[in-house]
Length: 132
Image (tube, rainbow, N blue to C red; front, side, top):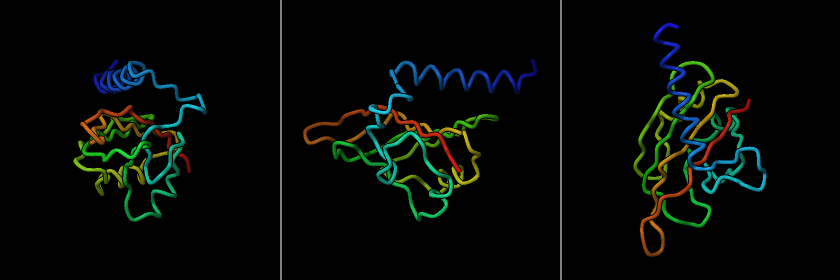
């Protein structure tokens, strides 16, 4: 195998392990994402929708204020893209990645830090599969 394929396999394995470690149950419809992008808690996000909105904001199910998170675009083919975000609004760079993504690519929102009523909390990761 060439080194490019090995890198792709390593990135995909790392993402898979991260999801498994957090006990993320993607196919259970009662287990919606605990965080939402523009209010969307489902596991699918339309590329067309991303293209139509001016900004994308991450929010918490319980109303905690999102202070930072990692945005990962994990394409079905190619290398994953990571952006560390301060605040709750996805930067334009992340939106551009999503618009240029292909159907079936996944977005992982991980290491979500938020300010709760009394203390700082870390929220569960969220994953979205991109649809047309």
